[in-house]
Image (tube, rainbow, N blue to C red):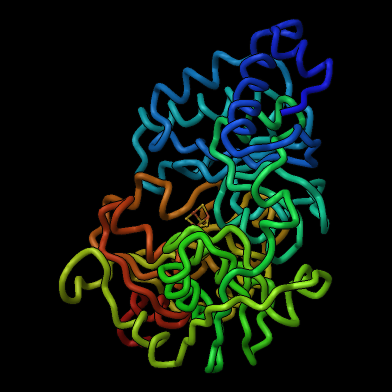
Length: 397
Ligand code: F3S
């Protein structure tokens, strides 16, 4: 792998131990995956934030670093709402550790915005063709597929290393040849709302880490594409997909037609809603969670409308980024009038608070795929209305 004179000197430790370590990570990855060089990035989104997943070893590793990131960098969701963690039932011990993790990142110049939807943030603009170092799988999928930017699915340490150096190794989805579709998916039914998450859940299991090219009559909105990509990245390992006539890159590339076509019919989508993952039979839902990936303003508005004149008697979490919530206080107020909680900085999958429940209903194919294994909670999928119905007063069913 070609290194500039400055990169060689960084690797020799001339600019300090942190930059030496960070460059070493990038070069090691580049060597493994056959990169020809390091390339500049526009931004980084760093996983490895929830104290639940990184523990003391991760906290120590981040705390030992010094210096400042060279590009705008933000964080993945943390294990709790950084302000109202007590409302989630988070212990003081966990909260203290979680806040230490955030502080360690802040000390490196990382913006303490914890979200899997960085593309909604002001001052974090992402454009077609930008090279990025993002970690969270749904954010990676959205950036690659819906925006047409270029990022691999970085691990926490490599995304942080890229942020500190301002570069990443040039391999994988940074290269044209890896962005061609490799399997076709023909969707032979109408879709709306959470159906896109159910579709992604099905397709991800089938295609693994290939690059699907969808043909569908439906006209998915960006929020629908967000749900589709998130689910495919969870049940499979899809980091890039195309939708004929919708996503930007397929309209500009000279695409080869894949040899294999997968057909998805309505019955398969409907079946996803009848499954309960993680246990046998109906567990009797005790909590509903919306906002995976973190809700957009449009999604918050839909939820607020559906909650009008309803009373939540169990638990309803609506997860979003702090910035989106702060830009829309009226929507937050309308949602919380029902008894639901709008949670920022965190989500139902990365927070240990989920483990206090038995059975959760979600409208997200990604949360559906992850909850049983990562949080030991039974999971069911429904659309927004079904999720609300399961946790509101019976006479409002
Ligand atoms: Fe985001 Fe958590 Fe879902 S990180 S994509 S809300 S699992």
